Length: 129
Image (tube, rainbow, N blue to C red; front, side, top):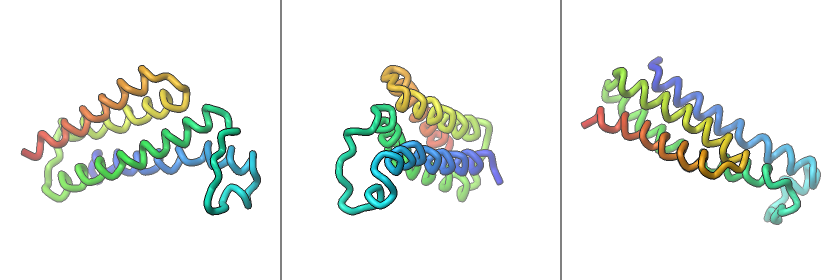
């Protein structure tokens, strides 16, 4: 398995892990029955960092498919070189930093990490053309 695919797997694991803080806090606050009820009421009573953790998870859910498509197309096309490896690693580590910035409420860090993750995607994309 290539490094790029490992980075994709690690990003998928990160996405799953980012769901835990919000889910566990929600269960602890409203109980398991209300936590899984539908429609879900708003939970403004949760700590601000928990609400940010939910947004960090949703942000990863939005960006993971884009990364997955790019990595998988490169893999199927047989494109793997030091630049694609670095691009995948940059994306993964930037997403870690972004999650920390998001949950920690550090807007500047979150924004910089987002653009660094996009740079990682571009690094891979440029190797395809």
